Amino acid sequence: MATREIAGKTVQVNDEGFMTDPVEWSEEIAAAIAAEEGIGALIDAHWTIIRWCRKEAEGKKWKSPTLRQITTGTEVSTKELFTLFPKGPAKKVARIAGLGKPEGCV
Amino acid sequence: MAENNRHIAFICSKGDLDMAYPALIMGWGALGDGIDVTIFFTFWGMDLVTKKRLGKLQLAPVANTSMKMSLMGVPVPANWGIPNVMGIIPGMTRFASWIMRKKIKQVGAPTVPEYLQMLIDGGAKLYPCKMTADMMGLKEEDFIDGIQGIATVSDFLDMTKDAEIIFI
Picture 1 (tube, chains in turn cyan, yellow):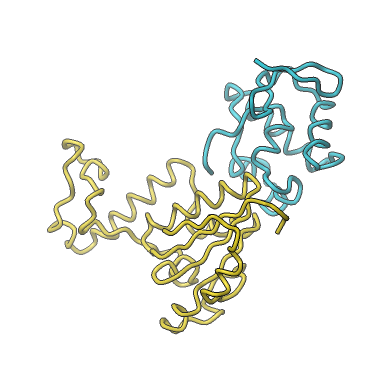
Picture 2 (picture 1 turned 180 degrees about the horizontal axis):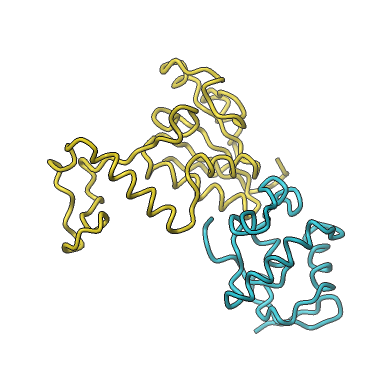
């Protein structure tokens, strides 16, 4: 398993750059990945989504939620989700939240 | 549209309930992965964006070799189809559509109108076909809010020069 350093911490990642051990995640790591993804500084609305995803995934053996699950679970609208995480929110949210690629099509 | 961004264009030509979903599912997945999405609706596919029709799409069991008795919950060998003669019984199309809607809901997928709204909100560009609109007497106000406008074939081809095109 490959490793890489993010925000001063060495974490395990897969070929696509997703963290493979969600427990290694920290808020500093999230901020660093968000910067890499071109999202910039994370605001409260980002954190609401990130924290919800982590909580949701934790109860489901760290299975990453899909976009539809995020919008129904957080009451964040689709438009808002695509504005907060532009150009590919599915993978961006998962990466920043330290989760794997979402498993599901909706 | 971002420069050098991957772009997928779907041509939806069918208005059956089951044929509405492929573009919606793949289009939504593409948006989620940061891919630009354009959908052109033509012929029966116009039903997907026509206000009076999109919530009432149906699935007919007649001459549909993929519709099996087991889909209806009938305990028979998996390959037993629904006899065409049964398909012509009044109410069968409605029943088959209801079964399909139930199955779609079971996997957590939204209805066609909800899906279209998600695609619009996610940035997909939707265009009904001009020739079909003229042929069916449909005007801009007959279509759902959020479409980009009625487009000709030439408009569509201009918009999708660098796109991967999928015909459904």
